[in-house]
Amino acid sequence: MTDLAVASHGLTKRFGSQVAVDAVDLAVPRGAVFGFLGPNGSGKTTTIRMLLGLITPTAGGHELLGRAMPDRAADVLPRVGALVEGPGFHPYLSGRDNLRRVDAADRTAEGRTAEARIAAALDRVGLSAAAAKRYRTYSLGMKQRLAIAAALLVPRELLILDEPTNGLDPQGTREVRTLVAALAAEGSTVLLSTHLLAEVEQVCTHVGVMHRGKLVAQEPLGKLRADAAPMARVLTDQPGAAATVLRAMGLTEVTETAAEASGRLGAAAPEKVVAALVHDGVPVRGFTVQAPSLEDVFVQLTGRGFDVSS
Ligand SMILES: Nc1ncnc2c1ncn2[C@@H]1O[C@H](COP(=O)(O)OP(=O)(O)OP(=O)(O)O)[C@@H](O)[C@H]1O
Image (cartoon, rainbow, N blue to C red; front, side, top):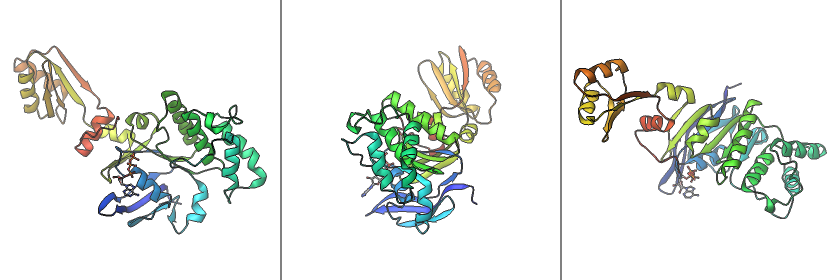
């Protein structure tokens, strides 16, 4: 048994002359909550659609749960729950009746146990009380949770969720994040795509970063942070002189504003930097060393500061 829930090799998709996904080698360990992060248009949805066998790759291949796709699709897809775009729920049917339709359409699901499984899935996503209400009266968060319930009608080893919190208000976002964390705690591997760094920080154990169709980083979240160099900030009324010292001490990405200079600490020890500032007569009003934010880490890794917060 492989220890990877998702493994892709050179997965590529071209649309005409445009390369939407460019030789992506994904490695999602079993048990991970893998945040598939990238700005709009970076190729996340296209990758996910290839992973699920919804579209054919131009080149490359992949395995889900150790089985080659698409050859073993019939065998592996029943063990994979997916949330990709709207599942086409009927607006005038209740949440429960919508799940009955979804379950009836699934040939791998056992009809005899349908009612119990539907009730369990509704309970799982906190929709039991609203199960009899029509879908069209649901809030966005409830609609999204019903879509996740549809993915949970049978036990899943792997969940692939495309932007599960997209369009949700803060309350709905929290509900979905809590649900993802609970599913992971029960042993499911989760791959979720997002363009929100906060999402990755709050629920993910691993992260893969897409940029212009390429997977530019893929690591456990803790390692990503540990590998990143911290920032030093000097509060001073002589930022120009401070910046000169920071550069001389080997700090990189040195910037200055009216009241401070900052730079990325490499091998330089913070106390040596302070000593050098004082030695050169720079008046230091404050000195702080900050662990990099996840956004800083991505800038370091990719060399680009893409806007991931919008
Ligand atoms: N069917 C298609 N035909 C032509 N181009 C496409 C098609 N699907 C996607 N693309 C293009 O491929 C690129 C990647 O799109 P994709 O939807 O995979 O990005 P994404 O990272 O999921 O973005 P978003 O967060 O907006 O969904 C985009 O430039 C998009 O316009």
